[in-house]
Length: 411
Image 1: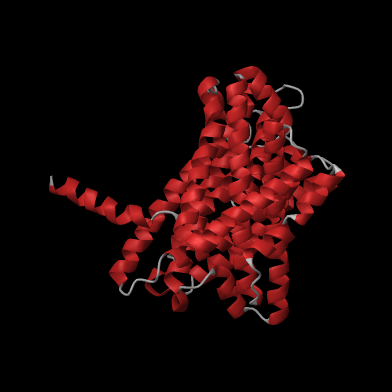
Image 2: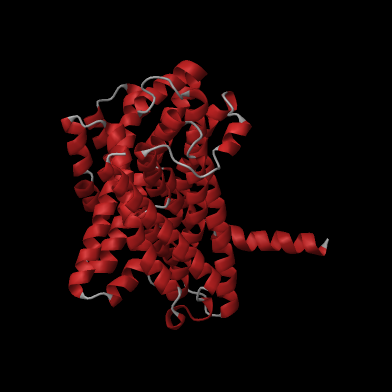
């Protein structure tokens, strides 16, 4: 009885602290994930399931480290880098981070435009404009009502995303034996490595690493004592684990749906083709649910991406542009691509490859900063955690170098 009461009290103390990780987790279920995961499942079946499982495990560790850095130091990852880097290096670092943020925004605006086209036949360019305008309204919610209301809106969209992409598996469940077989690490040529890199870039998101330190710091003031910080860090671990379990489930569901229902069907390596095939195979209700999930993904993730870009700019070059103005600027490349008729699904996949190359630039500083005793104090990372983070960095770099090598060799 006492133990049950203690658990109830503990839950009551932890639940109000949850939220920042769910906002960061939106980055892990954006339209770039949809394109990469559906393409991987349609082309290679269950071959690359292991990539998603591994990437999600990496993401849990990485996002917790980012949140911990913000909570313990009271500063964001970009702010800490801005304090340590010389001017030229700082500007160069900001430039690559902005490229990553632009690639993120590209995926999100294009994905939302595709969803509106699937649902209402809206022209892609007009759909991109609509997504941009709605995301401005969501950012206005944050400006006017604060982070908690913004978190509530994002979490509601995450629920819609989850229903949209998991519902198809209820109608067409995958073969358990094939899923287990997909957990064995392997590739099938250059294209599968490209897709694996895209999936990794879409799962361990650089801008999510930067922004999570800001989300956690802004939501939770630094506790005055050690016990308060321990409790806050424990709640943050639960926040990260639960949020990324949901995101991981959605990502794996996308790939399994494509592998079980779309493999070998012509045209299903595009989102439009996949939607048509899902509608034909599983019924119009599942097709509509799928498109609604994609739309929610684009709307939620484009707002979070804009917030991340503002965090990066403010921390590294000490400049602040109003979020709504930034929203207008960053959506221009996506609208240009939609206007000139670039294949939207391929643009999404390539954008995720760009994100993958940006991961080490976020991870290496995070590894070093969370390992500094003078900065982190009693919360400094112990050796096993430092080894795990180092392994993640090495794996990401090796995968990217392998992609370049295979591409140049023409394998």
